[in-house]
Length: 473
Image 1: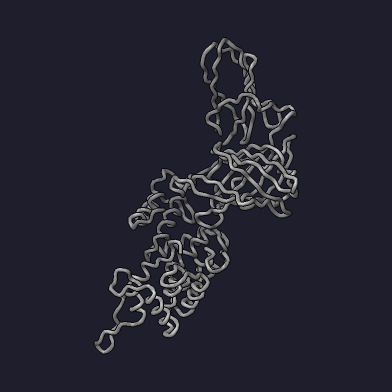
Image 2 (image 1 turned 30 degrees about the vertical axis):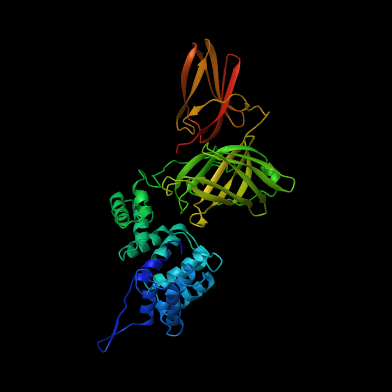
C-alpha cells in the first residue's frame, strides 16, 4: 500500500522450518512464503495465494491472515480487492498479530477499501501503539504531528518518534530529526537533528537525505510581530503570529468581484509558527449561475485559473490544481488542490479587504496541507488611488523589508516625481529628483506596516506605477 506496507520484507522474511521430534516440518505458512518468493524454486504466486488462504482460513494463523490481506491489497496471486484486504487485516489484528493494526490504520488513512477516515486511522494506530507495535507508534505519531483525525500535538508525537526510533523505524528517525531541527515538541537541537537524519539517510530513507540538503529548517525562527494598522480595532485582516480560524461570512459570488493584492501566509502544523509568506494577486469574477471564476498568482509566478461556488459555510473549488515547490518537495514541484476556503470581507479606511483560511490538499500525500491564511486588499479604480494601467516599474526586491529599488532610463535631463500611496490613495511618501540623461537606479528606504502599496513615478510626461509589497519575511 503505497510504500508503507512492505510486502517484500514481509513475504521474504522466511522462517521455513519447524522442528517436531527432530524432524523438519514445512508449515503451510512456510510453503506460502516460498511460493511467493520469486527467487525460490517453488515460486508460484497463484499457488502461494491459495496456500496462504488455507493457513489463514483453516488454520487461523494470525500472520497468515495479515499476509493474505497484503496479497489482496497488492493483487498478488489473485485479483486486487481492497475491501477484502481490509477485512483480513482487521481479522489479523484482532487475532493478535500486532503489526496488522498499522495496516488497518493505513487503509483508513489512505481510503483503501473504505472511505478515507483520519479519525478511524488514528484509533487503529493507537491500538497498535498501546501494545508497543513499532509501526503503529510511528503511525500514531504521524497523525499527532499533523493533527489528522486528532488534536495536533508535537509533544506526544515527539515521544512516539523517540521511542519507535529505538526499534528501527526509519520514518520515526526522520521525523525525530525534523522535530529536533525545528524545535517541534522539544528544544531545538541541530546536532541531535543531524544525528537522526543521518541515521535514517544511511539506511536509504530519501526524505532524510533531502532534508539534510536544505540549508535551513522549515521553521527558521521567524520572530516578526505582525500588527494591524490599529491595535484598537480588528477590522484589518492582517495575519497574526498564530493561525486564526475565520468564520465564513460571504454568501454570494458577487461579493468577490474584483482584483486583489496581498499575501498568503503558511503556518506549521500547530498553527503557532509562520513558515512562509509570499505575495499573492487574485482576480475574481462572478458568473450568472452564481459561481465564480478567476486567476490566482502566487509569488509573481504563473497564474492558475480558479473556479468554484459559494455556500453558507465555505467557498468550494472545482478541482483546481496547481504546482509549487515547498520545503519537503526536494526542490521539485508538487501538486496541490484548492479544496475550500472560509472568507470574510471588511472595510477599513475606505479600503475593501478579503481575508480568511484556505485549505489545500496534497495530491502526493492524499491529505490536507498545513494551515493557510490569506490577506488581500481590493485594488481601487477611479477613487483617488493611482491607476495601475500605465507602463509598470520593475521593483526589487518585491516584497521588500526596509527598502526597495527601481531603474529608470532617461533620454534627457528630467525632474522625477516619486510618490508612494496606500491602497486607499493616501500619500505616504514623496520625493523629487533632478537627474541627468542616462540609466539610473534609485533606492527608497521607508518604514511602513506590512501590506500592499502603490508606487508612482512621473517624469518627462510619462507615468509609471506598480504594486509594492512590504513583508519582513
